[in-house]
Image 1 (tube, rainbow over the protein chains, first blue to last red):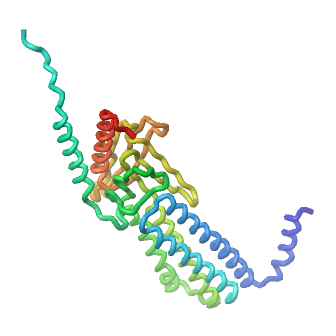
Image 2 (cartoon, rainbow over the protein chains, first blue to last red):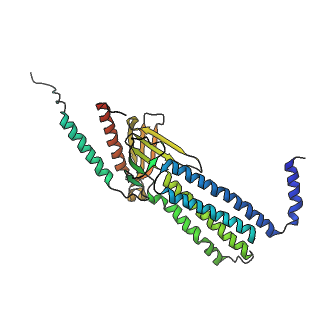
Image 3 (cartoon, rainbow over the protein chains, first blue to last red):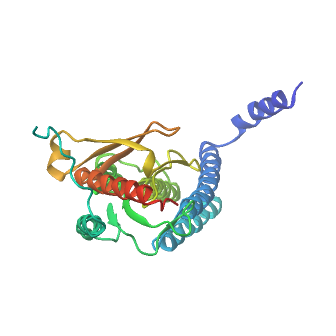
Length: 83
Length: 219
C-alpha cells in the first residue's frame, strides 16, 4: 500500500468520528495557513516591484504589506484558539 | 536659361541652435503639466529610478493607466465591503456559532483587502517609462512574474494612437502603439492619459536623438 493510500484510509476512518464544526475548523485553519503563505508572497512581490521601480511611495506600500502579514497571522492564531 | 531647382542654403549654425532651442521649449511646455502624487502622467518624476536605468539616463515621462480604469475594481471593493451587512439583513446566520461567524467575517475582509491591494499594486507598478534614451514597458501580469520590454529611441519607426469609445473620448485616454526596428516589433502603452501628448513627446525625443546622431554625440 502506498503512503497516499494509507493517508486516504486514515481519513476515511477518522472523518466520521469528527464533529461537523471540528471539520469546519480544520478547513478554516488550512485556508488561513494558505492565506498566510499568500501574505508572505505579497511581501516578496512588493519588494520585487519596489526594486523595479524605486520611488517615494514604496515605503508606505511595504508597510501595508507587512501589516497585512501581521493581521493574517493574528487571524490564523485567533482561529486556532477561538474556534 | 532659368534654374529648375535651386537648393536652399544649409541652415547656419546659429539657426540650428535656434531650432533646437525652440524644440526644447516645446518639449518643456508639454512636460510641465501634470500632478505627481499617484498620477498617471508624470513628467520628469523626482526621486524615482528604475532597475535598469543607466547613470546618465534621465526619465522624461512616466505613464500609468488612466485612473478611471480603476473604477470597476474600486466599485467591486465597495460592494464587497458592504456585502456581509446586506447578506445578514436578508439571510439569518443564526445556525452558525458566533465565533465561526466572527472568523468568517475577518476572512471575508482579509480577502477583500487582498483583492483591492493586488489591484492597486498592479495599477501602480505597471508603468511605461520614456527616457532620453529608451522606451520601457514594465508589466507584472501575475504574482512574482515580471515582464520588461524596452527599445532604444532611435529604433522607433512609427507611433500610432488608438482611442475610441465614449469613456476614452470623454476622459481623453487611449493606447499608444510604438513600432520598433528592434527584436520586439511593437510596444504598447495601454490606456494612457493624453495619448496625443505622449506621441508628441516621443516624436520630440526621436528628433533630438536624430540631431545627436547628426552631431555625432550618440551615447
